[in-house]
Amino acid sequence: MKNNKYRLFTLYLPLIVMLIFMLFPFYWIFVTSLKTSQEIYGPVKYLPQNFNLAAYFKLFSGTVNFINAMKNSFIVASMTTLVSLLVSTLASYAFSRYRFVGRKTLMILFLSNNMFPTVLLLLPLYTIMRKLGLLYSPSSLVLSYTTFTIPFSVWLLNGFLNDLPGSLEEAAMIDGATRGQAFVKIILPILTPSIMATGVYIFMNSWNEYTFANMFTNNATRTIPVALKSLIGQLGVQWDLLTAGGVITVLPVCIMFFFAQKRLVEGLTAGAVKG
Amino acid sequence: MISRRQEIWPYLLVAPAVIIIVLVVFVPVINAFSMSLQSYDLRRPNDIAFIGMENYKQILSDELFWGALGRTFFWVVFGVGLQFLFGFLLALILNHDFRGRGMIRSLSMVPWVTPGVLIGLMWRWIFDGNLGVLNDILIKLNLIDDKIAFLAHPSTALPSVIIAIVWQGIPFFALMILAGLQQIPKELYEAASIDGANKIKQLFFVTIPSIKNTLGVTLLLRIIWVTNSVDVIFNMTGGGPAYSTQTLSVYIYNKGNALNLGYASAMSILMALLLALVAIPYVRTTFRGTI
Image 1 (cartoon, rainbow over the protein chains, first blue to last red):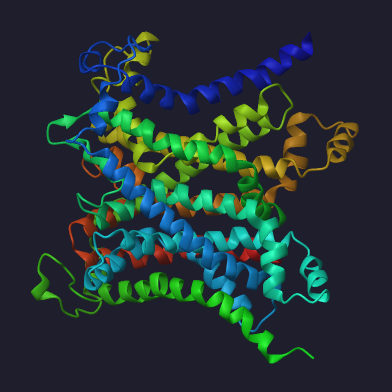
Image 2: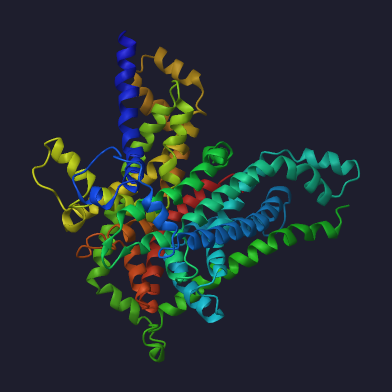
């Protein structure tokens, strides 16, 4: 009995308070997205009065063209994921399996990238993209996003690879396989879940990115975060549209995250816990 | 004999990544430095010229710069400090066994995957002075008599954006700390409790020392991220009212949007130097032993 009371105050009560804080904002944008304008501008109602999907339909109709933004976001995020995964897997394999001159310097080069302020890279990249004629094209975003996705993926994948014993490939190589064959046939299949988790992380970050996207896109190429912000117009904020857009934006990444979270968390924490 | 052919492989494998990073990170950094020495304003493209340290001199006498620097400090200390505190608390709770723990752990991570824009906008909606739900809750609880325009007053705007960034950062701390907690051998607690240490003492003498590496790395990483963060503030207040939420990165971003790239670059170089003070120990502690 005493033990139950103890658990209530040290465990369940703080947990409930924290969960309300963490989850209420989501509940609130969801409820708002189902409200009519009158309800939004009237007294605050905490439960949805009717299941009104007008905001969602409006979002996908001609005037707002959210579909186009979703398409752009999808292209940018997939391209970033593909490019980053490809080059990071190769690089992290080299870092994990070879001891070569300059390895340490190169690893520090990647890892120190974390400390460059976004704004420090943003301004010169803006002028560079402008000169190259890439400004307002999806590739300007893909290139910008690799500034943070490649270093992070190299770090994650290097951790995953270090957990796989080198004897795996050595056994295959004794049997006559080349290192390339050993990598493709032995390591790649084992590493696939980790590569997928890293991919989810890259996709999530590219999908969510705003700071670059706001400066590097125009009406035709803008991604979802920029489109969301554009719903704040001269005539005030269209909260019903904006919250509906928010729900649609966050759902795909949430679903992906739930599937990948276990492996992703292992990778993220491995470095910190061991280090 | 190790063949020479093998020696070239690691270089070929890292080449694509290195080339991209040099092109998109190191060339731009040099570029930023060179822009910082010019009167680089794209609204006056004909006046672009080398002006030496002029931008830096101007910055040192720019009141908005010093204000933004002070605010950045406040933003980081309270933003990261509270994330750390609540993240730690959440990790301690989630380290217990109870029904539905996996589900709750997943759910509480969602703020971390939420785009910064949406975080800014959703909290702007919650804090709204007329229609906001926070005012309604506070009035119903009899905590306030009249609605407060949280984001329209300089005194309440900065604490409000800090609440939003705290909300974003709790999951990451909880995640990292929880992983650290699960590595601590149970015997340590048993030994401590035999020695008569109560829960509080165990926290300070067993838990914290065991995970101090994780705590350090996570703190430093978050300090860097929060200092650099633009999207939450930019979408919540734009840096206003009366510059009261304009941190250094938001100030630089606003200047960049106004196309005064020389001045903005000079500020970003200064900011990078300040961050290096934090980041260098981060790189050293994280990668000691892993490289």
